[in-house]
Every structure is written in C-alpha cells, then in structure tokens.
Length: 452
Image 1 (spheres, rainbow, N blue to C red):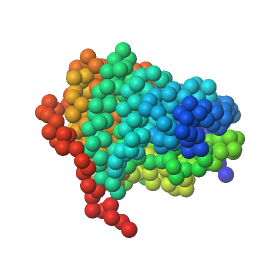
Image 2 (cartoon, rainbow, N blue to C red; image 1 turned 60 degrees about the vertical axis):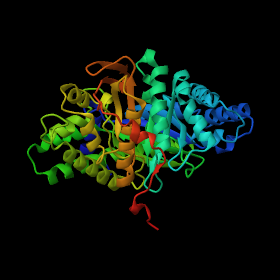
Image 3 (cartoon, helix red, strand yellow; image 1 turned 180 degrees about the vertical axis):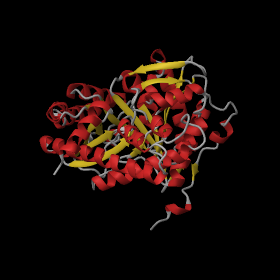
Image 4 (cartoon, one colour; image 1 turned 90 degrees about the vertical axis):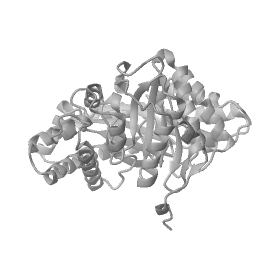
C-alpha cells in the first residue's frame, strides 16, 4: 500500500525533478512479412505495423493524462530489416526504409527503429546491401533509425564491417550536410547489442522476442541529483544506498506504466529499461549527478569512479523493483543531450579519450558526439573499433554515435533541437589509423567467451 508521503514524493519527482517515462516502445516482429517480391514485402510490413501499433499513441496519451506521468515518446522497433529484406529479390533496400517511415507517420509515433543488420561475425549479401543503403535511407526518411552490430564477446569484432561503417557514417553526414549531418544522429554502431532496447536510435526487435511486446524506458537524472543533495559530504556507501533507493522508486513507476500499457494494448509486457537518459534541460543531467558527488567539472579525475558507482547503484535499485529490468539499464552519457556534458566539453575538461574511459563502466558508449567534418573514415572506424573492444572484453553493450559535421571544426557547435540538443565539435587525434583499419579481417573473441 502506498503511503501519502510516497505519493507526494512521486508528484514532486514529476513536477520539479524532471522524472518521466522517456518512451513506450512497441516491438513488432516482421518475420512473417518476408516475400520474394519486395513490393509485396513492403505492403505486408506497412499493414502489420499500422495494424499492431494503431492504438499505441492514443493509449500512451491516455495513461499520461490519467496517471499524471509524462510520457515523452511513443516508438516502434522492428525485426532487423536485413533479415526481413533478405528474402526479396532486389538490390535496393531503400524502399523498405521508406515503408517504415510511412508506417511510423501513420501511427503517429516519434521514431521507428530496426533498419538494422547484425554482422558481428560476418556479412551476408543482404546485410551488406542494407548497410550500403543507410546513407540514402536516413537522408530520405524522417523517423527511421538505423543500427549495425559489428562485434560481440562471443564472436569478436568484424573489422571489415567496422571499416565499412566508418565510410557509411561519413557518407551519411555528407548526404545530410544541409542539416549539420543530422542523419548520423539516427545511426548507432554496436558491440553486444541487446534485443529488448526501447531507446533510439539503437532499438530493434530481436528474433528471440515475442510476436509483439511492450518495453518501457524510464529516465530520472534530475531525481537522482536531487536525492544526492540531501547527503552532501556523506561516505560513498551512503551515496550508493541513496541512488539505489531512488532508482527503486523510479523503476516502480515504470513498471506500473508498462503493465498498464501492456493490458490496454493487449500486448505482452517485456522489460523496464531504467536508464538515466538526460535531456538538454537544466536539472536533467547525468554530468551534474557526478559533480554533486564532489567533482568540480565532469571529466576531471575521479569521474570514471563516480560513474561506476552511479551505474551499479541504479541497476541494483532497478532489479529490486522489478523482475523484468532489461534493455541497457544504467547511465547514458550522450554529450549533446546533457546540459552538464555540453558545458564540460566546451570547457575542455571532458575529452573524447575521457569519454571512452567512462564508457567502460556505464551504459552504451560514445554517444551523440560531434567531431570535425574532415575527420577521415578510417579515424571514425578506429574510434568504433576501440569502443567495440571495450564491449567485447568487458562483456557489455557499447556503441558509437558520432557526427562528423561537414564544414565544422573544433570550437564550432551544432544545434539539433529537441531531445537531440546541441553539441560542441570535439577534437580527435590527428595521427592516422588508416593502416590499422586497412588490415580487415576479424579480431578474435576473448578467451572468456568460451563459457560452455
């Protein structure tokens, strides 16, 4: 039974501390839409998505109004499109992306994810076709998000795919030059991608999932920041306990919304992803949580240790609150989407190398980072390889979402608006990695991948 005190505390978290349901994401399997005729496949895809998700936005808005809980995004994720399109006898996969975009607009959702390929051990013909179509697909669509998984702890790192993704990211940036390379904000390169991630741009509906499912992503950096203000100067075990209790309360709210959406949409409940996903709004920053622990500026010495504590405590609190915590649960550090990260990067304290170190202990990886437009494809690929290596060796999900902004140099900034925020262009190392990337092949899986 909830007490009056707990109810008032939750109301305060929503009204003053930026607590929200970041997304309700419906995952939809498109395996039944495979067809040798690409046009027929696209028609099946459109029909299945619009039929399955026709009430998603309406139900989300109803829950939002009835419970008084902000639900920022309603999204759809689908089976990795390379698997679905593989049955079609066609060379051009862009029509599949256009179909996803049209279906998403019909349903009224914010984004649709799953224009994806899983190539951690090798590329099929379909995988390569899809990957090479990504720049045009993201240029010609508004709501489609794309992801490519290039490595895993079990398979190692597909360096041929890594090299190709360096080229694809550069081409995507160039094709969306008039929008400061915005297409790259909808493209993620993963290692150890998970099948139940509700967050964009990396969401897709895994082949091990049900026909359709509801996953919910909760976010509350502001709530955690506020809670830590009450334990200033306290030992780290007190800090960890405070974060854990706060994460418990946040997750319970997410569980409530997820179960209600599942019931009303007659769709199985999948997972609650408790990720501290920041926004550009003041008071909704992961960086400010780390600074509340005693760091003058996020990125200075001690930042990685503070982030490790935060990430672990968030997961412990979430697991206590729900038996279905999944996705990428932890703390996100997207530079452009976090007011404190933006400030730290602009001051020069937060660097690309420090961000890479931080990704060893937090969710995902190098996220929403703008780099100079003249950064080479090989350098982009090398950054991806470094991040994939962290994921592979540490048996965790890592990712790269880089924006090599055409015409921009260090010191410039870009403005993307909304949740995507603004980003200072950060420096990369000028020394070449071209010969390293040119080797190709596969970096073998680590010894601890042999777990059977």
